[in-house]
Image 1 (cartoon, rainbow, N blue to C red):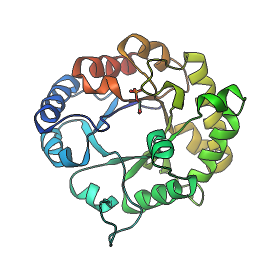
Image 2: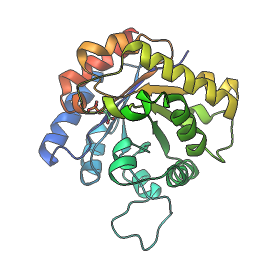
Image 3: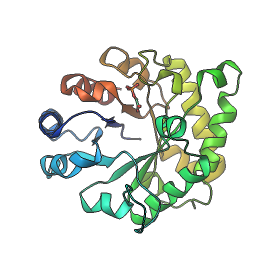
Image 4: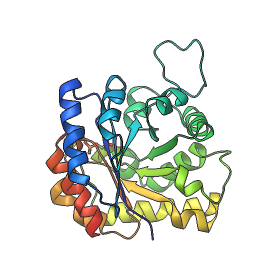
Length: 255
Ligand code: PGA
């Protein structure tokens, strides 16, 4: 039994006031609920503020990015240990906005996955095809490449499913209001699980959380989350509204 995991990616939104209010509302809404895992990923400047509000709650904290070195002369960058130091358990890696707007390669993303794991920070590795790739029937090839290269040299271990999360995020669905159909999400997530089994072994693949992300909203969450291989959601826009985010969390509980 995989416990569903719903994470909010706040992207470059919020300010110190709205971030704290949003975090407090999510903490109150999640309460002692343990049938779902929940986390929020605020912008770097608000991590510590939000972390203080999450302290002692069941809501986890994640960064949206990191640089794959322990420390050094990397102006503007943040290391995995810094994220851990301010209370993060997770970090988003390979988000399509970083792949496509900031030019991150699979090789660089792989370094980030390995650096996060080595530091004890759980990467949420995002993979997903563009519309052009889907229309050219390249979806499976793209997902396979991003997964294989993103996880290159990551050794399988009995608890890897607790350290690593995969998120299927079709680029054409992110922030567009055009979500994948439940059948498309299921097909992609089942494919990813089959590739994970090849790469890391069946036992690890069967226990790995594979989220869906891309225009997840209160009105489509239940049908997406009811798919057998959709183990939760990485939520962008709707995670900035506590009522909407908590409705998606509820849908994950009822799946
Ligand atoms: P969205 O974003 O829910 O606004 O489409 C998802 C994401 O980027 O993780």
